[in-house]
Length: 107
Length: 111
Image (cartoon, rainbow over all chains, first blue to last red; front, side, top):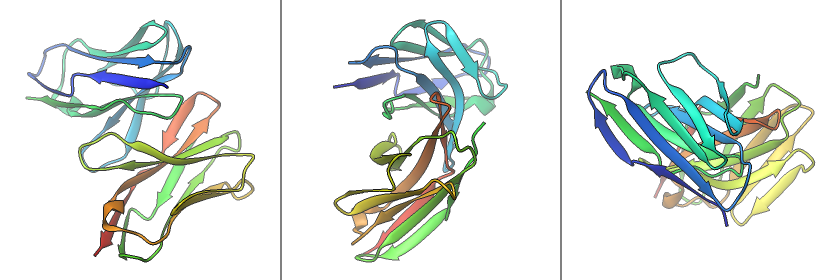
């Protein structure tokens, strides 16, 4: 069966620091992978999606970037975090499952 | 792109009653429509889905209907229980690549 792993679960980072969130999928090959952000009490905003290695599409202009160095690995990054980057970040794959989520607080 | 609208944003029902959540989508190319349940602080969990070649699908107390012509789909929960209380999201798979989500419905089942 397919599983999706995302880490870390929680993160507190100062403004201006870098960010790296990682997501991996097991049990499938060539999945589409997604990063979403969810503000408190709000819906899911699609940030990036990837249909294959090195292929990244961005949905909204922002302070974040994504990379897909391997077929089943998807990374969300930032060089300098802003306060507005705080939120709940979720990785998902095209089979319909989500990672556990990362609660990011920028202080 | 795709635009998914979801209503209502909040829904309060008495235990044992039915709950219905509705979504519309804009692009007729969307062909897969999952529903998710998200409990506070947790990841969304897939609870049921439907593909565009099917009009209705049922799994115990939950069912989903799809009207391709009108481009809307609905989640039906019967005999609601307090543990059904959560936020529910609909989604549409657009162009075989991107999942777009509705804005969510907070369901409160009162015991």
